[in-house]
Length: 72
Image (cartoon, rainbow, N blue to C red; front, side, top):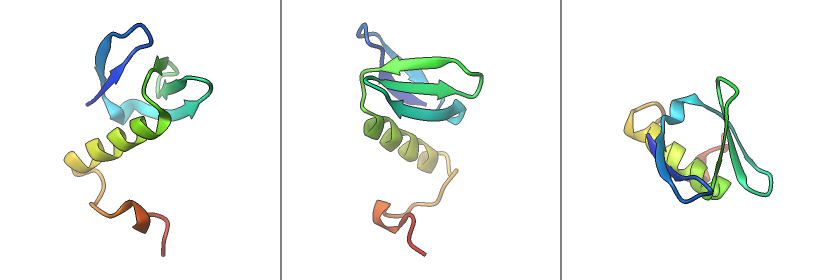
């Protein structure tokens, strides 16, 4: 689960497993697998960082440096 903030200031947690897409329109918009969209105050980079950390915590991805991702 990741902690996020709605535009009205309400804090909530979201199961990052259900995130399909994160977009920076003018505001950060998260699209879930079911098509629902959530707009949050956090930047797209902050959301992605939280998602990566969550995936590491649950063992969904290995631990590696961000610099190593994409290198062969």
